[in-house]
Length: 125
Image (cartoon, rainbow, N blue to C red):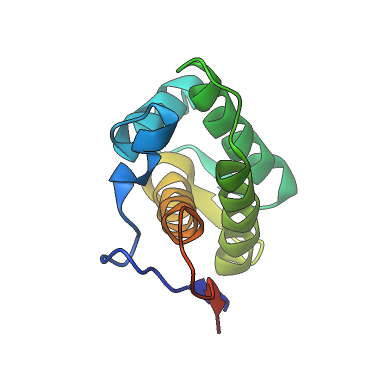
């Protein structure tokens, strides 16, 4: 599995790296995505291109709600979060709120923390 190396501490990145984009804490984005998807507890999906695309689109919409276009580093982190989450679940089913969203968030925040001002390689295996 491909993972990212995070240079800001913590296994899943620093949620404050979005402050430059008008979001003080990435957990606010996470909650906006949860509300936007409105999946009842226990909702299960087969993890693949469509559900991951919907999650990524919900993050884009959450960014647009703070009044700015989706920044390039955020877009790159979303793309890599989609790829890593797909690899992590490998086509298996997952509960949306309990498994899929937390896994996606961890990858997304980690990649963004690495891309946002990092000068070292991001992806390691």
